[in-house]
Length: 145
Length: 136
Image (cartoon, rainbow over all chains, first blue to last red; front, side, top):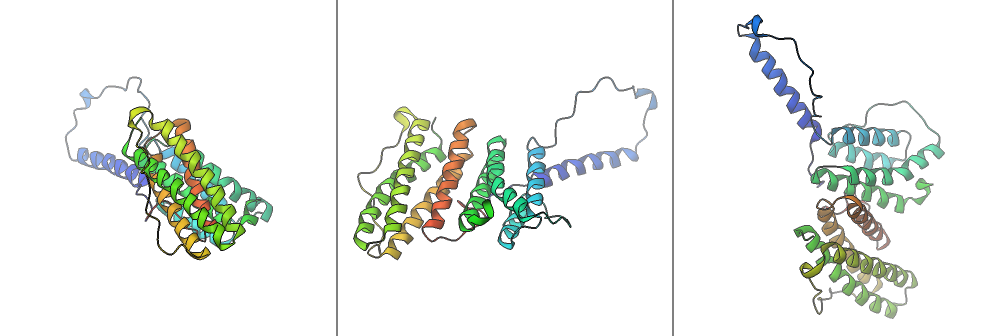
């Protein structure tokens, strides 16, 4: 059972809350005089402090999945699922040298992501994913060249 | 800095240092050079991780090692020793996985690496590759 983490659904939930607020207003009488032009607005905080990190990791996993060996493809699919993402579609067929380089680098990428994550749940998930990638590379050392 | 996860990881590493040393002694009697080598390497790694955790926790909050730990059954054969070593690595990986979420910066990097090392040693002791090492 992977550590629980649902940053994507959290962002979706926040988006849904915004939609609900908009819909709620549509049935009201709005005082147009009360509407003032917006002053300088502070940048909105990201929906989740870790969202951009999760997006990066998802992109790396999808990248590594292209043309890789079945055991690694299955592992990446499991990891993407834990992040609330799917493998995506790609017709790219990188060379085996590129595939091996990506697989070899991925464990380090995941470990670095674990070091950068804010939420403890995501730290644990990414650390476990990095360990899983290292395990599979230990079983298939030819894939980590 | 003492947290429940760090304390549990330190307790697991204390036990690992004792048990892996004991398993190494048993391995010398079953004439398996590869197993002896893997246990020697595991022992060094667990000593290093234990010392790291002692430094992280620091001071009076460091939990001491028990005088002795119960040896598992079935360690009279190479297969039994590997199985017992695998259990030790799984227990340490689980404890380290909890601890990584309680530290930051270089300390986290160190523990993430230690977790990965424990996961790789599981393969050396005949364990399967799993998607999420450290989870049970």
